[in-house]
Length: 373
Image (spheres, rainbow, N blue to C red):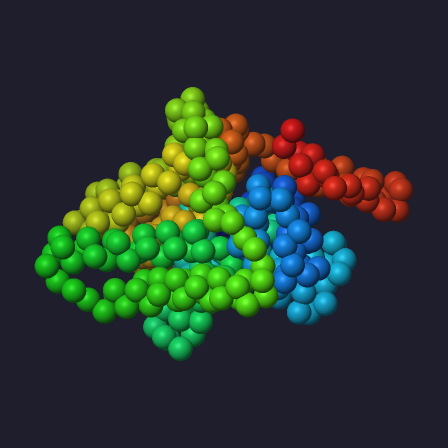
């Protein structure tokens, strides 16, 4: 029991800075840092985002246009700088989450929220695969930061539509759907619907604006992810059916425990859980199962759990301590293509060792795929 008490003291009595830095450091140790396997192609787009040189099977990558366009505009021509550019958004995502927690919650509940967050795959997604998800997650979180300011919220939604329309659409639609369900259930409409509605409108406008840009510059793009989905639907369905247990656990990992506790939270759980279930069904036709669901369900989890002072108060200090220790000893939960992945830290250390020994890092076109063979 004395060890549990020490853990509890660390969680609730240590300084905010030391608590936040150490927990994030532990998360990064568990996950490691790497780039998306398609990061090389994204870098190619950033060299000239107004010309499509990809084959039909890679066209879907061009719809993540905003990040490469910004990199092009600020003159990023080196692959390493392109990585740093996206890593900046990954770090900003974490810092913004911490700022939101301590601004909107009591200090005690902000610490609880951070621990729950670190146990969710969404927390390390933008580090496990540094890339366009780094920008998507940051913008989704930024929408919460300015959810009461339509003059900022709408432009953020537009940027999301230009960065990753499909993920942003389902992420914002999930919240919108939950608020509508709440209205149907309680027969009472509230101002809460404005936030997801405006964000959703912005995302759609962003997608339309991107199509206009492509048409103006004569950039021929096929249906992107819809086209890819049609060509791989049978594979995706078989993958889910053969690995459904591992896939389902991975999308929330230890967060499943928090969801079970939320079920008992007054009468407010039904509409949230229905919306969460419906949005999560996309996992059946996803190739990057954990990553996709972690991103599109993150706003729902943020809205109803992570920034919910009332619910977080129902979790006892002892429960938080046990949850934290369990997360600490468990490996990361991440499934790609139906196969469980592993920590990328050893691969990071291998690169560092190469840098120390040879003075450089040998990086080829296929290096991004190295840890996943």
